[in-house]
Length: 206
Image (tube, rainbow, N blue to C red):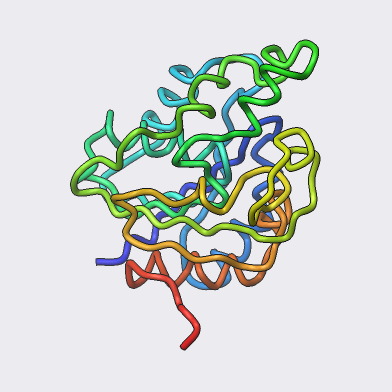
């Protein structure tokens, strides 16, 4: 059954207003969507997860950008994956972020730039909890500094490699033409998110 209550989560270095455009598009399609903020700049992973868990209720679905997707999966595990709705990730490095590792290793004060989420970003989510439907929408427009720092040679969105958005246990995966930051303003990503929230799968070209 489709959950109409949706939390929309931002990524690292962002705040809830960054996701208002996406939440507005979901509301226009009949969802009770609202952007939820957490303090990615001053609080660590556990605090972010706790904030999300506090906002969950049975059958809540989640749409989350980048780091927000990793936090959402951890929150679902803590809350009870069978108790919430589907999770749509936008460019989330579920398999771990090479760019995050490069920032920590090569950039002066790189660990401070990632604050207390570096370990989670580098490791990814580890595994998708049993009973949780997660879909990941990847971007393929290579616009962003992460690709330069990470020295990517394969498809990426400027921050996250497409390969890093795939892992065993995902219910579905799709690639749209958007950069990492562009995913939160992408009409194609909205259409795919709605499809997954409603049907548990994305719309794939024939």
